[in-house]
Image (cartoon, rainbow, N blue to C red):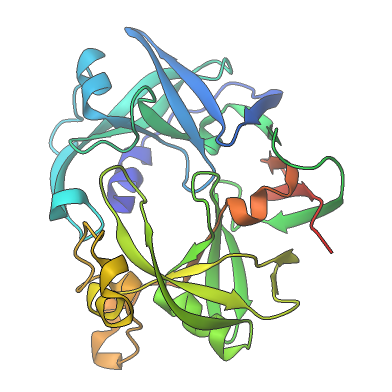
Length: 310
């Protein structure tokens, strides 16, 4: 999917002057509307990927979207996709994200739902043509300490953190109740004495009708990432590991994670092609304490105001 986004972004036109500030509300997830020539779509706002719009298949068909010639339609196979594969189509589409003005927007639609109706898709916070996008969390305490985290670049959503000789990718995610990481990230945090495995199994649903196994982690006292404390993190595990720990909990698994590099730690040099960069989604277990989460586009940063307990 990242390759498809890259290809779509090659010919991106110059944008008009951005608006100074867009303000959104999260209760618990930020929402907005994207207006196109043939109609509009109601979408979630994601803090986790670069500038793009992802749509369910039905609204894309209703809007009459057509894939870009030659490179705009292909099939991908991935254990994190329901059924193991999906047909992906994409093109540049004129759209107005949240009233910030028409622009050419890299747009992808998939034959598997990425969100549950009535929402029709997901748009990146970086797709707003604005210098700043401020998300007010209606369920969070007011005030607190300000945390400024540098993003990897002005066009990047992620924060990069060097820890234990590895580069971890941090991604903010209002949709996930807990912070989630892949096996490689958990191994780094374990080696640094920041978390312990509990042997307790849970399920994580990154997309509708799809659940993959996770193991609950216990943060050590004072464990923090970029100043943000850890509360209820979990780590991706394989189905076999989940069944070994708790067969009853594993019964709800709907995805096949046996060949998913996110669920296992691949360290052998001969398997370098299967190694997955360590990543951590910072979920609502942390963000529920943050009254505002702001994208500072010119400053290439995230600015969070959080009132953490203790």
